[in-house]
Amino acid sequence: MIRFTEVHKGFGPKVVLDGLTLDIPEGKTTVLIGFSGTGKSVALKHIVGLLAPDQGAVSVEGRIVHELSPEGLAELRSQVGYVFQFAALFDSLSVEDNIRLGLARRGLDRYEIEDRIRDSLALVDLAGAEERFPAELSGGMRKRVGIARAIAFRPRYILYDEPTTGLDPVTSAVIDELMVRARRELGVTGVVVTHDMRSAYTVGDRIAMLYHGRIRQVGTIDEIRQTDDPVVRNFIEGRPTEDDRRLLEGTPS
Amino acid sequence: MTSPTAASSHRLERSITRLGRAGLATVQAVADVRTWAPHVIPQMRRLGVDSVPIALFIAIFTGIVLSLLSKYIFTGAVPLYFVGALVGKTVMMELGPVLTGLVLAGRVGANIAAELGTMRVTEQVDALETLAYNPRSYLVVPRVLAGVFMFPVVTALAMGVGVAAGWVTAINLLDLSTLEFVKGLRLFYRFKDIWFGLLKAASFGAAVTLAGCVQGLGTRGGAEGVGRNTTRAVVLGCEAILVLDAFWALVLL
Image (cartoon, rainbow over all chains, first blue to last red; front, side, top):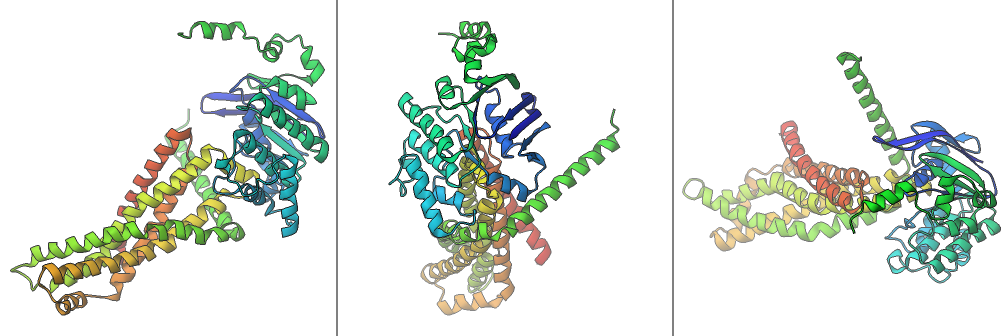
């Protein structure tokens, strides 16, 4: 289980996480929703130790991430796949080398590595794209390669950072389907950061809304759909609040 | 309120801690041989071999100008075969290493800072970490080693070509024979002239590549940040070369 306990994180004077507490149970996909800039990606980066909390702790299976030794952190990262918002593929490497890079340190032999590359590309429907370079791929294909790279080493957890942002609705639906397929076929625990509610309802078992640096509400899809909380309701229904309206009125046409 | 003594002792403690952490991180990065070893030769080719044409171009014109300049200085005062001495000493001990270093600070320093800076802002460095790689081992160590090995090689070539350009100029434009030029060249020659120049070049290589890596990995804020840190890397590299040049002269001459 992944557990956030009273996590505080700021960048200079800006407070991003302000006492975030959240449990992410095994075997399910938890979707973290919230307005842009509310710290969803920052929260995700704490899970793999890319950021350390100013106060509080993030633990994975009881191990406090920011207290791990470099070896402990490497061991933790070998269990967590991370799909970045813009895929973060290595420009100078081909698709298969991007995936191979993640497999090279897992103690697999050459044949196993080749099998894993082939299987993970097949899972994201990109068989045959091995030799292509990231610059030759569309946005959707890059995200699929990012997912293939994350699932290739058979992680226990996969973290998706805004996997459908910037994609057309059809490609977004394909990515959603891949996330569902990854959980079903590989049995991984997923954490998805998104503000795309259609995607959240498709891939999530639970939804947690981050608001002003802490969890506003967490629950099943049905619980979130039927919420009485006006902030959550406005967000999931895409209705601007009075504050948002005032901002728009102040915007010159 | 904290007293000035306590504040400065706290600052000193923080600086020592930071230095200690940086030292430990460097030791860990260098110790991770299987990560950096495969990348040293490709980096030597990229940073060194690909820089040879521009270094030789500079060396040719340095040799020509030195030859003409020494004739202008010596005419009527010193025997003209001293042209060989001045060209040889100056190219081997000072202009060869320093001009080559400055040119490579522009080419190599900017190249490294822009590449790593782009990797940083597109989350490729974060992706490396999530794949359990130490970015210092994967990105920094091979580039610094390539700089330390290849700057002297490129400088040695530039020294040879610079002296040859001075010789061709002398025999064609200064009415000097080859024998006279060589006589001047050998007059004050010491083996130290060469190793002094090459040692300086190796230190320039370390400084320029380190400046590029530190600035590149420290990039924040998108394209603007990449541009800003690339400029800083070049400026820092050039400054380091001039400081190191004075340092070696002070210590070894």
